[in-house]
Image (cartoon, rainbow, N blue to C red; front, side):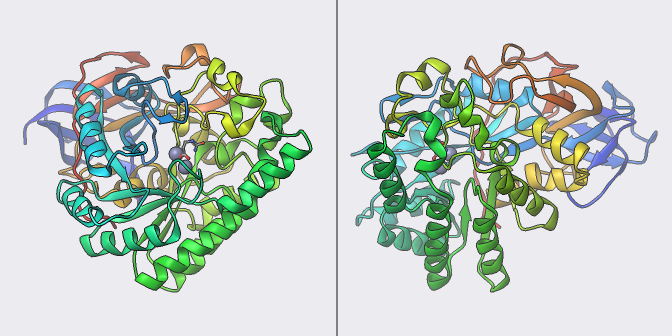
Length: 457
Ligand code: URP
Ligand code: ZN
Ligand code: ZN
C-alpha cells in the first residue's frame, strides 16, 4: 500500500461509528482506514492526536452570489468556498434560480461553470418556477447531466413562487427521472395576510419579521406539499424547516412510506426571535424567520430523535448596508443570513458539546445525509475507502469566540457575533490537498469541480 498523505493518531468519526484509525490517502482519495500505527510511509503525515477526524461537511443549502429582487448577495465561488473550508465544509450545493423569462436549464448550465473558481467541490439545485411544455425535456437533460434536484417555492409571489400544479407536475416528472424536488414551504396567502395586517398597524419593519411570516404558514404549506408527493408517489425534501410541527408532519409521512426528508438550518437551531428586539433586527431577517425560543428547543430535540435528515446553512451573504437599506419594510428586504463558515462550529458547540448529541449523528446530519440526499454519496460524506479525501480535523475542546472580523465570508457581520464556541476544525483537506492548516489558508488554488449527482436517496 502506498500513500501520499496519512492522517495519523486521530479518532475517525463516521455517521454510524467512530474509533481510532489512521486515514491513508492516495491520488486524492481515501484508500484505507488503517489500524493505528499501521499506515504506510507518506510524503505528508498529519498528526491528529487528540483530534476528531471527520468527513468534510456537505452544505446542502448555500446561495452563492444570489440575486433576489433588487439585491445580489456579495460572494462568488472563490469567496464562499474559502469561508466554507475554514468552517470545515468541503462541498457546497448552490442554487441556479431563474429570473423571469429565463429557463431553468440555461441558468443551471451557466451556474455550473463557476464551480472551477471554488476551493472545494460543488453541486447544484436547478429551479422550476412555471410549468410549460419545455420543462420535461429540460428536466431530462438536467438529470442526465447530474443536476437531479430542483428547488421550488410556495412563496415569493411574482418572483419564484410556483403554483400547486407546477409543483405536482415537476415532482411527477422528476420522480420518473430519479431526481427530487427540494422545496421552500410557506403558504404565500397566509404570509400575505400577515404582512397586510402588520403593515396596517405600521409594524412592517425588520423588528416585526417574525409576525409577518407565522409558523402556521409553514405548517400549512408542508401539509399541502406532502399530500402532493404522496399522491404522485414522488420523493420530496423540505428545505430550512423552522418549526417542530413541520418536521413532525414530514416524519409522520415518512412512517406512511412517503420518501420525505427534513432539512433544518443552523440559525433556526441556535437563534430565536428575540434577535428582532435587538439593535440590528435587520441582520436577522430571513425566511422562514427566526422562531420563539420554545420552538428552537423543540426543533433541536428532533436532531436527537432522528426526525431531521440534514442541517444546512441557507448561506446568503448580504451585508449590513444591504440589510439596512430596506429595513423599514420587510417585504422589500434581502432575506437570508451568512452562515457557510459558522454552520458546523455553532452546531458542534451547542449540540455535541453542550447537549451531548453524538458526534456520529453530527456527521450524519451535516455531511453524510446531505451527500445522500444530493446523490453524492459515497464519493462525499464518508471517509470509507474510495471516497474523496475531503477531511476536517477537529479540535473538539478548544474554546474561542466568534467575531465577524476573524471570519472569511464576504460580509461585515455574523448573526453569532460574540458567541462562545467549543470546538473547531483546524486542518482541512480537499481531495487530499491540505487547504487549511492549523487555521491558516495553506493552499488558495481554485481546484473546485462541479459534481454530478447520481440518483438521490
Ligand atoms: O431567507 C432566505 N432563506 N433567503 C434565501 C432564499 C431562500 O428562501 O432560501
Ligand atoms: Zn428558501
Ligand atoms: Zn435558501
